[in-house]
Length: 142
Length: 142
Length: 142
Picture 1 (cartoon, one colour):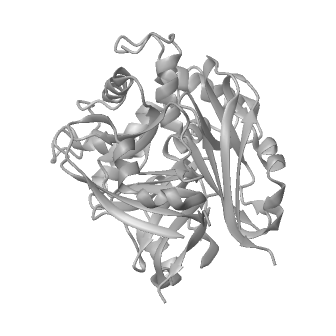
Picture 2 (cartoon, one colour):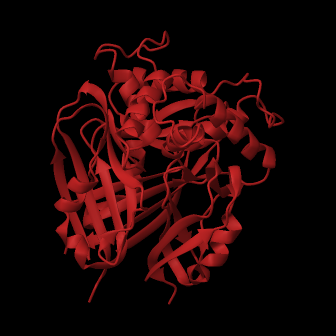
């Protein structure tokens, strides 16, 4: 069983955003998969995807604080500055967190841990809508 | 051919731990796969998985030193501090290294390079047992 | 449909190198895949793979500058120093960026975004040739 679909996530401000619910709603066919995998792939180089804590909004705010400190906009070594001070740091942050996720599907649901949620990591000030390709595959339930 | 199984890794102290042998032992069916992939997925947000050097214990100790320096417990910007000083850094370290691995299976074995080993990255002081879902799939040998 | 092949990337100097074209040329069979995934796996612990901006060479140079600053060769905490000052930082950089990529295949091509390219991240001064295992699988076009 193969499923492949591109969805567009609406524009969001810079920061780390929980999108687990949107992903599950976009893929109702997962309910038919007994055992498989879901691949999420963001088709951009200044936004990324990661899994992390799904309960406390302050965790996601601390992600933003950490990455802004670790990848500073005003570092003296940047040369690719023509697209704005948030551009080059956004590229680095995207590679540190990664452009894709692979999540097991078990008995019709994503087999996330209790505290795991899917983060859209928006690293640009105004990144616009973001396109994500979902590829699901596995054994069907019957 | 599909295989999906959850195993529990025993509690380990904070640090980077080589678990390649445990993983291979837990999955004897891999021997029947001619060509395929193995996905490992940790169902937690304060521990992670990575591949790195499998020979020198001092490499794994230097990993711990680097990440403790790069993601400091006493950074002034943390606001999510209710679960202890090691909690928020653990979330960041988990996203920097990643919650899953995908490894090729070739002729019945994991196609790791000579020096590659699987690290369980335990970022909490007392993280407890950790659950990992394995999903293997591929062409069987006959 | 399964495809598995190891290729060797020629030695490159330390830095971030765009290899999208080489990858596509090595895998002509992708043209027959209607929907699927391609997994790229580097069998080394001091080089890695990531996706990022494919147009401006200065982005790749800024990657090198950032990672050299973030993972300094002269940090006082390194103990694994016998293989040279570039060795232990190379291991850390490899785990920060990752040893594998998963890219969707759609209608016979890699479904990369307009600006996404595949980077070989060479973290050693003289890393030599690098072996990459490709595993592709999906539904064939007819």
